[in-house]
Image (tube, rainbow, N blue to C red):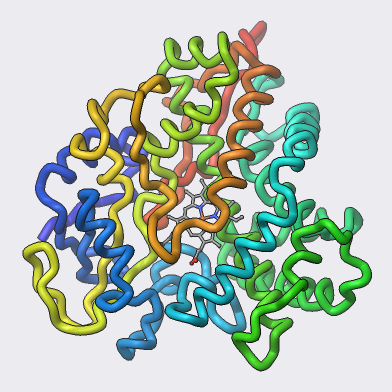
Length: 413
Ligand code: HEM
């Protein structure tokens, strides 16, 4: 049984070599995870896909096997829904109906036409300089001032939430996704309640929703999965705001960090911005913002790729190790924005494949382009001074702080 500290800051700074070595040990890696206990990490394309596409053997719904969900206690992903339980935790027909409805609403809300608005939001954030404590005039906390607010602001606009309440929604989303300080968890808990209550009110007067908004599209042809159909829509919107927040924030900040670590690749991109979709694909592979999937629970006793599962045993899809497996991607340790075939699996697979993959891609493409257009000479501030801070949650690789210098300094450095 391996005891690996996935929250160690040296691992988080450069996890690729460790992940490559783990991927070579075979697809099944029994581990002990703090606050969760014994679990199995599953990597390697075949076994991972088998895990994510075998609903007859594994479930995301812990209650099916008589267990409590481990999200909240372990702090893997915030407890999404105060009410009904998140989309992640649903399985079978119930999940299919809601998921189909969500995918359709996202398609109808016209993600592509959002591009100019996302660029505008990104530019506004880059223009606004909030002087922060202990930072020089040419320094910015890229997470706090850019990567953290941008995805939430996009989702708020996409849902059609009125501008006057948007700052409150943004504040609650940040308190939930990025709890900080000793009162962080308490603030997150109360922010969850405020956000959920607000969304209930928001969906109770459909005539106020902009007709093309995601909010309005979610209200059209609601699935009849529960007696209280509006509760389903509130749950979905609540889940969307949170599921895409820290993950997309991380894709932006890790993307920027990875490009700064690889100046020749950054130069290639700066010379030709049509490369940006491939660059985001390569960042997803190399940086793996979601290191694992949510947990799966074995429904019974069975053999699986040489390992015996018993009912209730916990498995996680080890996305980050699969991304570093040479059987999936040639020369996986090389960050190469020109690679021919990229088989990154950072959005998962199967029925629970990320519902926001396309949106996350679009946001990251625009964010990187606006960022490096505004500050082409940007560089990471000296790491010795603690310019990077990492989330301690198992299963994610999220930056909580990233101090950059936006131009050559004329003072203090
Ligand atoms: C870089 C950004 C993102 C990453 C790496 C990511 C990753 C993932 C992964 C790995 C899963 C599957 C988890 C599992 O199978 O256990 C997932 C599910 C999901 N994600 Fe994302 N996600 C991102 C952004 C977003 C965004 C922006 C949204 C919202 C618009 C979103 C909405 C969802 C939803 C709704 C699901 C659940 C799907 C289901 O259970 O049917 N994600 N995401």
